[in-house]
Structure formats: C-alpha cells, structure tokens
Length: 348
Image (cartoon, rainbow, N blue to C red; front, side, top):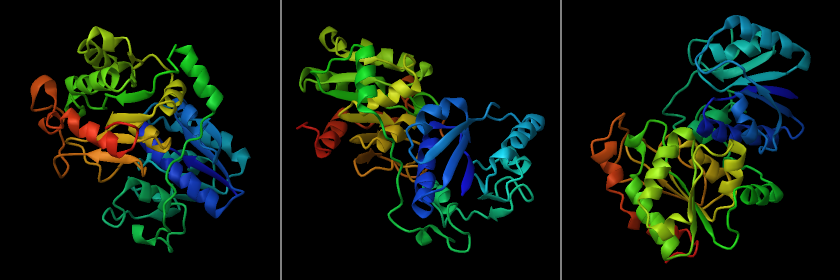
C-alpha cells in the first residue's frame, strides 16, 4: 500500500500530522507513506520513522500555479500510489493527487473540492473539535469514523526520534556547556507581541533559573524572533547573560530540534516549536493568552498549559505595555516556576 500525503505548511500542523502517519502504520504496518510538503519540513519528516520519503512542494504558500501542480502530479504517476490524503483544506492542495491519477483521494470537503477528491468527508467541527482528531480520522473509512468518539484510543501522539550523536554534535557546534542543565525558552509567536509572554517575565524566569538553580538558558525561534531574544538577554544581570544564549535565527530547524532535545524542560508561547517540544516528550510549560489551546493543544502527558482567560480572542495587537496582551502579562513568573516544579525537573 503506497500513500501520498499532501502535508501542511506550518510547523505545528506538520507536527500534529505525525499522528496520522503513526495511525496508518498501526493499521497497515507495511504501508509506504510519502509526504509532499515545503522543503523546510524535511528535517521534521526525517525524524518521523513512519515517513518513507519527503517530496518537496516547490510552490510557496498561497500560490496556485495550476500548470506547475499538473507537472508535479504527472511526474508522480510513476510511483503508483494507491491513495492520496490531502490535509490542507484549500482547493489547490488537492490538485497534485488529482493530476497524479491516484485512485483514492481522501480529504475533508474544504473549498468545495468535489471531483478533485473522490473520498470526500464533510467536516462537522463539533464532532471533531481537535485538529489532531481531524487528521487521524482520515486514516479510517468514513463509514467507520463519524465523530471523534469513534476514533480508537489512545490517539498516537506525535513522537520525533532523534540521534544522540547528532544532539551531542550540535551542542559542541554551539559551544554549549555539558556540565549545566539546560532549559529552553521559545519566546516567539506567529502574530507578534500580542501572543507572547512578555520578555521581562522570561528574563525574570531566566535570572532565577540561572542564578538560583544553576541552569543555562537557550532561546529558540526564527530570525524574526531574534529581537525578542535580545530583549530577554538585555534584561539579565551580566552574570546571568553569560549562561543565556539567543539562538533565534542562528540555527537550522534540524539543529533547533536537536538542541530542544538536549533540554531538561521547555517554556514556550503558543508556537510551532511548542509542538516540537511536546513531540520530543520534554517537560513543557505552554503559555496561552488570546489564542486558545482547545483546538491545537500540546500533545504530551508532560505538558502543563497556563492560561488565565477562556474562549478564543482574535487579537493582533495587545492591550498592554509593549504590545503584550494583558492576559499574558498577568501570568507571573512564579506560576511558571510552580508548573516546572510539578513537572519534576528538580525545581522547588
């Protein structure tokens, strides 16, 4: 059985899609699963043992280019896929499996994709409240799974597999001390300060972890998160700065994943790297403000979510100082320290 999955384009969504691949493998141990996704996804897919091959999607997010999608589909015909599973809900994402002439093309109805998909599922959002449930449901026949309650439990959560030698190598590459325990912070968020825990709270936590607990702090994120990392470092005492390293924008995604795996714990905003940490089974404190964990929570038994408000708030700008949202300002560092203590990483 050969399956082509058209994967998502965001880090967090790509991480949650691993639950689908793990479920397919549990149902069909000899299945070959190839995933078509942007090139940047390759380091994540390489750490998913269920994925046989990562096929690059060269078109940028939002670009239609039917001609190029037809060319990609025609080139894939020789692979002889038995099924195509389309995870994004867009019309264009269903084009490649259609042009590849894959016999069974599965996905949620999305943007009226009749014809492109022939195993089409109308989505009842109430029946499938979590994104991971919507992904996993596509591994089953639509007559069997009509709501999330029909999905066999426990759902197989994402589980990345790293290599210890690779982790040690990347630590040495960035001259990270092996003698001090490491805690990682992911201070970025896709939509800016409104969904970030304030830098001064991160700094207060870092100061305590370094000066009182003997940790070193690694800051992770993309290039656009580098300034947030520098705001944290500048708020520290000189002694603490020596043990706080801002790697936002300075590592590849593969290096960031390996460094996160070297951490004893992670503190993160609602971000893609939060889902990476969960998939690495790291003790994790996830900080939420206006965005809600109800749809895409961290999938881990070692995660604690801290959120002081309820409901979903479509916020792009914060209502507090420096553009932060008041609900995140109100999460004091002591709440995070208490959560880390409950996660049993040696903090009291």
